[in-house]
Length: 449
Figure 1 (cartoon, rainbow, N blue to C red):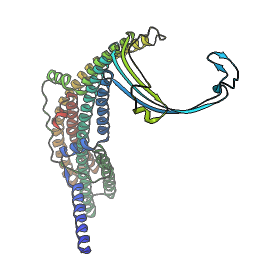
Figure 2: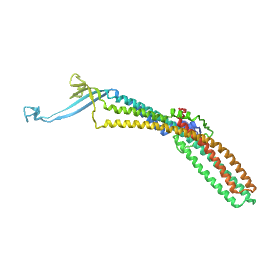
Figure 3: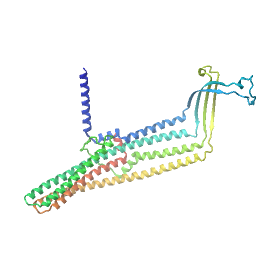
Figure 4: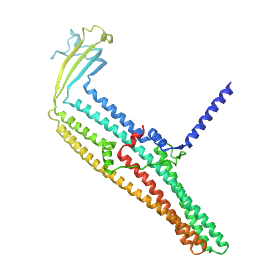
């Protein structure tokens, strides 16, 4: 029976291990990577914690309008020494008066109940509630901005990994062309139609292309590690991404894009809400110049026995019920300076908001212009690539017929490799620019729940 149980748990462990291995090596789509990042990214986890703190702070602000209730218990042991006074008169030691030559000891037990209620505090509780509510909304928008930043970051890293992998293919093709070229030169050298120096030069060219290929492999690995980190995974974890993903680049008119950004960008909304928060903070500071009015109730019992705290409630007690008015008339200009600081912070928030509007407009305009330019550059580079392929083919043919040199062939080969790299870089830069434009518009976050 024990053997069967052991076999069962061993089988279950092996199946779980198998599934875990399959999960780490499965092909991840762009949406898969984004969802993993939204779940595991550490910066986003910190943003969620800050959001909860803001929510708790807002709830805490209501405590200023609720009554306070305090219950105190205590006990004390005392010793009273012999006295030579009767009231305020010194009488010395009188044997017929025991208290003049005897000391007394005992215990006291007490219980206190204090109830307080804020009636008016210059409006501080009111403005504090409104301010913390706005601060919570600012935190909500900060969390939204953090989510969007993570989404855009993952998209950019995903695109960069695709770009580096594509460049790796380009460099591999360049290395393979150099290998074929070396074989061709060696064959021509063996039949006497090529010089030995051409063989050496071909080997050098192959070595250089191989070095470029190996360096690109390192770049691909760095890009893979960066994407893993953004998803909250181990940097060296296996990662295979979908290379067939499509990135549409559909944009409207510039003015429309600017209006959408001003309306939806979460970072801009945080600055907008910060103005309201700073305004409430100014009113909060000014409330310090008004008086405070509160009501209180105090009940106390003090007895020599602990049990006496709960017996004979009609004896050994004191209670007070009253209203307290306090007004701070001068505290070294502290309140006045606090108001000045709050007004400066309000001015700062307004200036910051205006700057962010201009900055966002500039960013959308720049990204829009860059994207349009990249579209034209891509079309030009596609034509250049076709021309470079044809030049390389003709250079190969001329060298084979003996009418061309190896230097001309190598030059055509390098131009072809550069044309391929430029086209790949331009295409993926367009994808990256489009992702930044989506971030500025502030709409990408709503695509992921």
